Length: 177
Image 1 (cartoon, rainbow, N blue to C red):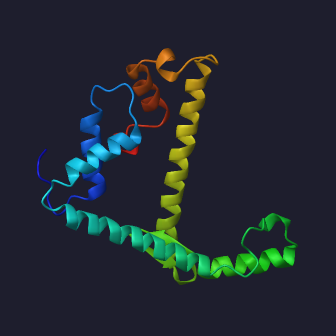
Image 2 (cartoon, rainbow, N blue to C red):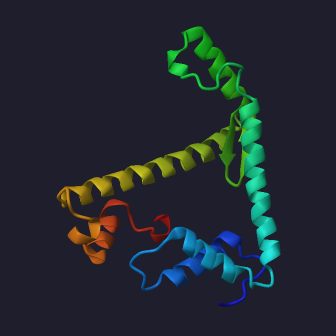
Image 3 (cartoon, one colour):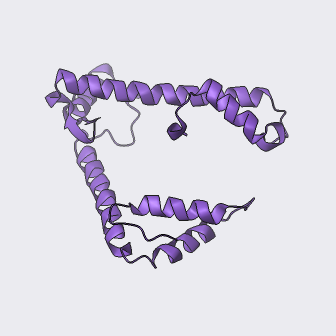
């Protein structure tokens, strides 16, 4: 295994090692593979730095989630908002909108502080993600149509068939899968 540079993320290094270890396997036990990948990654000279980078990202995400959950109105936890009276739903929505943080490029901006350009970027990102997921759902429907109840995908389709169907349904960008 090539030694990863400081710019390499732990996630990417783990993905790369897992792909290498998966070659030629028809089945895998994920916990066992995880242990194998971890054992190899621990040998990397910059493993601690990569772990700390990843830990920072995890902690950042947890802090962001904590901030979001502390902004919910009292009584909103465990209650389906659709079952609330309209006046109460509006109060919940106002609190949610007041605390809403939206991803704009590589950072998050409070909705009420977003500019028109921020909204355009966020809207495009959400639409792109939504379109992608819709195309994937269409692909699953197309694959299902060619199968009976007892088949697995690999029984009904070759990798070539699936690649062609993906290309026809989802699109040409290989990085989206």
